[in-house]
Amino acid sequence: YYCPSVGYATDEGNGYYSCIWDSSTASGGYYNVTMEVDKSYHNPGRDTKINLFFLITPVELYNPSVSFPDDGSWGELHNFTVKVRHYAAVNVCLLERPATSTEYTVTECKYVENPDNITVEFNRLDDQVLMKSDGFPTYHLANVVDDHYMSITHVIRGEEWLPSLPKHLLLYDYLGWEAPIFAHLPLLLNPDKSKLSKRQGDVAVEDYLAKGYLPQALNNFLALLGWNPGNDREIFSMDELIELFSLDRVNKAGAVFNTEKLDWMNQQYIQSMEDEAYLKEARKWLSGIVLNERGNAALLAVKSGLTRFNEIPKKLGPFVSGVSLPREGEGVELMVAESTRTVLKVLKEKLRTQSLDEPAGFFSLMKGVQKETGVKGKNLWMPVRIALTGEFHGPELGVIAYYLGNDEMIRRLDTALEKA
Image (cartoon, rainbow, N blue to C red; front, side, top):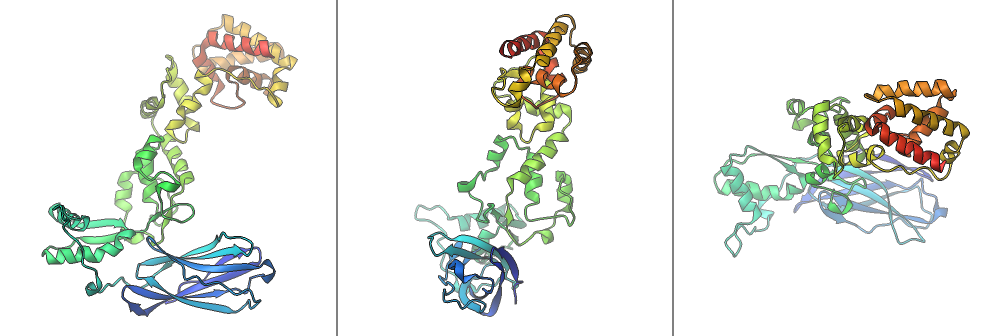
């Protein structure tokens, strides 16, 4: 069986490696894997060594400690045969190390499937401790007994449990019970293709819920790690996932846990929420912020910019925090302009006599400011936004004005005029 070649780009050109599963060499739970590496792309002047290592699914790292010679004999094929435990697949990686460095860099990894079915000779299994000296069963026994009495028909778990499968099947056989159907899924991986672990980020569902990810988004995201419906669609309800999901569309390669994709998906779910459901959830994330009677308008105004609900306190800054006016750059030049002082003074006077009962009313008021001052566009709107929020961009300015109310807006305009 030949694994497909894979190309990878370096600054010296292109090379490839391929591998051969030799099923005839299966013995004692091992396979021989022959690596064939074409080093014709290599530039000897760079004085670089390439090492092979085998990242064995799921937990073992086997390094045969082979390297290419620095004698200029590039262009030939170098073959290495190593023993690899008989798992369903293996990550085969190349490491590159400049001669002046002690650190290796992963140049390319290729996930290689074993095309054979997994077979294990039971008589080669070690004797397993089933009952500890304190009278408590080990996991292997407890797992089998518990699943049997719970009438479990299907067991779907990570591929790291493949080495334990023969032991569990033997226990079912010895106890005279029918074994459930087993399926083993590929591992979730960190961006560097290592197994997902706490050392590189959160791994518990609770951790992600605490950051403001919606359960529906997490379910959707996790379902698409290692599985696809056969098209490019990405947003699914739970009922749709239940209807469409099938094990035959689960990939055999590990899936990278991409938090940027999770952020995008969570944002899609937030934007699709009905206002009532959104407001109910959003108020759980105020972190001590007390909103006035117009708080719902403020929460709805920040909805479009939310990726996670834990961003709400920061997004509400323009509504509830003090204003920090710019101290350098374009903002300073804009705020000290004579036209800015004129706009802010006229707006302040209009706020003394005109009530603001809805966000749309602020735009009508600003039209009056434009007509009276002759200032328009950026020179009209940007100074007002900076004076009221201290920021160049943010939620709709009419909603901010409506939430703040006339008295607070006048106070902020006075502060801006004093510092301008």
